[in-house]
Length: 400
Image 1 (tube, helix red, strand yellow):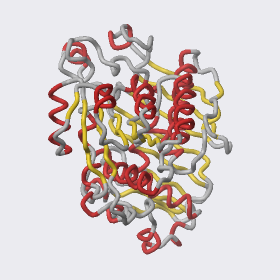
Image 2 (cartoon, one colour; image 1 turned 90 degrees about the vertical axis):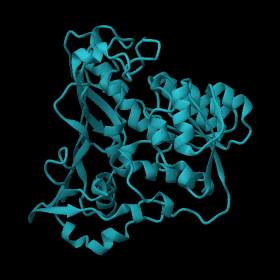
Image 3 (cartoon, helix red, strand yellow; image 1 turned 120 degrees about the vertical axis):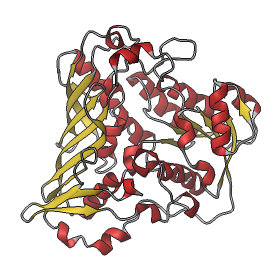
């Protein structure tokens, strides 16, 4: 439970009025519905996809799993206690009749194609991040989801990190005031650069020795862990972006399918409400993790720096204080069997529960296709800005 109880520091005028009782009463999501209905779920992708808790929801049964690799198929079967496995998504969609929905954890370059294939079969879809890899794919994804009338949810982990839940509450109650500036970061160092090239068993390589989609991926092509802290708190949309990048002469940058020359990219973004966002995605850095700082006209919230200092909250006129988050795992949206520690700051159980709950209630999930594209598209445009030396570029809207 350590990840759920980290301390943050809040700087907020009026935050003192936000009592512990009110914080404890905040609902993270809609309560899990009381029903006997079961959602029959298929899982695609046995790497990251084996880390979730769908099968622990009392109203979900994982009826089939698939991965191109036999070892990962076995991993999925063990993780989800599922007897039925297929050699490919296409085979599963063609042969399996016990499906209501599919959770897609394939490579980023396959996300839109796989979502479309599932929805053509009348299946709801949960999809890992990012939503897409180009603006053309963004438009295609929006069209596919809207025409299908089916449920799409993107599994952005930042949305359910404790700091983001807390910030959302402070914003919705007005305690933090107008958030005029935010700093959002995703740091994922690539480690030993020689080993990065030579270790053919890493996730940067396929089993046949070819390089995977992760090799050379532009940092801002993976922006959702950052922008989940914006769209997931204020619901704002990014309207323009100016970005810069930095790189070196290394095969990761000189020999990739994206023609990406940057290890790290930093963007300054403007929202539709006239607010500022500084977004960093770094692949070569002595730092790690996802975190955000939100600055409001009444107060600010700072997530911890790799655990080396606590998360902080403070009133603008009264100074700082440490904050202990409520135990969000006890929220009624999470069935009791799922109330345990999980990956990405405890977010995996919330994401699993929210998707199943949304299907049971026949409602839009917390991160629907519109929020998903609002978290993804600004990064795609930002990378183009970095390639153009920081030229400010407009970000198209993919809302209704």
